[in-house]
Length: 137
Image (cartoon, rainbow, N blue to C red; front, side):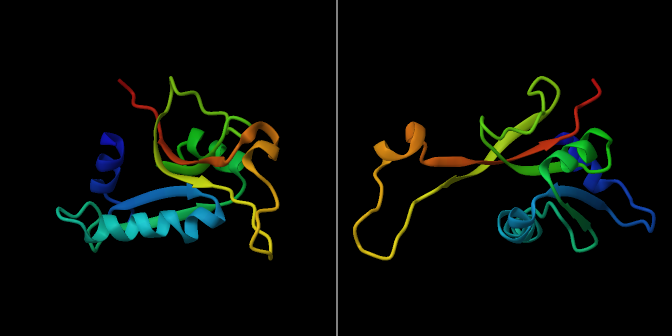
């Protein structure tokens, strides 16, 4: 997070601070939008009125490349062992921001499936995580 704080404090081309975030479309509309609003309104403010936030959306693989190339400061993505983005925990710091659960729903009031009938008993779809560029220590 130190790198993120430094990036927010540094100036963009017009003198304003810029935070560049890569994320999927669903997360951009939900979790990331709410997170940005909280950062703008909390005390002390992390994102001031003059701070610009640039969002890049797309496929996870493309967003990982943007992070590795230094084109974004943060990557916020869904993570699950079966669908994991290829980021090394030794190279990138990350944290879990939220957890989602998939729940099968049908029109009648009785469940169509039980957890034991779902392949692998997997009820957790994955975690939304963010990762920032590696520190150069």
